[in-house]
Length: 362
Image 1: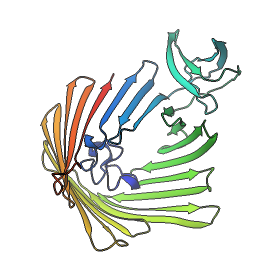
Image 2 (image 1 turned 30 degrees about the horizontal axis):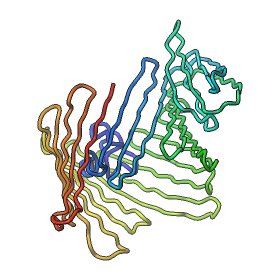
Image 3 (image 1 turned 180 degrees about the vertical axis):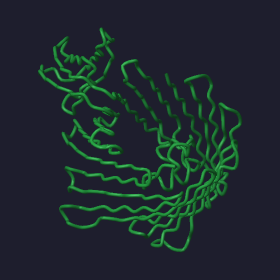
Image 4 (image 1 turned 90 degrees about the vertical axis):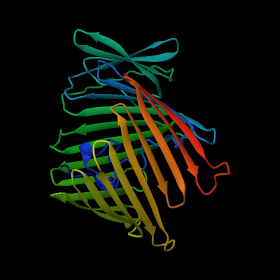
């Protein structure tokens, strides 16, 4: 049983469920409740050249629309590569060859990335760029393991580039750099994240290089299902601790529990999860903020698998707000989710929400 990260002690690890991370409070309370957005669409596709694309669009209940385009390339074994550039009709055309990942740069402002076939073992990609000025670049990528490049462009006109390197410097060590560029304001950001994971230890460090700089570190140790972890933030410029948290938990194959103390040990939360059988799961969470009074927030949820391709979920909190959701696999690669929330104390008022989600995957 692997040790989860500190942020995953009281919730599921990135929505992957208990099977892989053995996190404490599962996604029962937060995931797959589709009323949070009026409409959501997600399209995922994978190419033979190890490039994954994801397009996400959301329409909120306030009629605000947002979206993001993500291109992700991963390769466990990279060969030496070069890049070349040319122009066509005012756009820059960049071609990458010899199993090199697509070249992403915040200064490029890429519009789209298209796979360009595989010729004699050479994977090629074409990247269309908004810049008109011709620039010649040369990139050399040497053989390595666990390299992943991810480029995201959203409707807020923010470009995020993430480079990950896992199990290359040391077994269990993953290093990633995240660069952000805002063309409208010409602002930039850079982060360095380190993760080290062993059978009984999971440690992470996050460094914001251009702001502060600041650092956030956390660590979790585990033994025979028992977990204990702590986190802290530090501002280098101010030479001061910005925050700290702690958590303890216990994980078993069919149930788990955790107690966390966050916001400088002022907000306490206790969570519990129980997998009753292959069809039924249940979870509960209680939260108390010592700064705001003696009231304790409570939320309970349950999930019932109707058949191998569909399930239903329901939850309710101490304020009387109830939510239901239904998820079904319509056909391979097409998933439909519908949900609604109701304020049981204000049935006659327009406080209720309904949402739907479509996911297409190939």
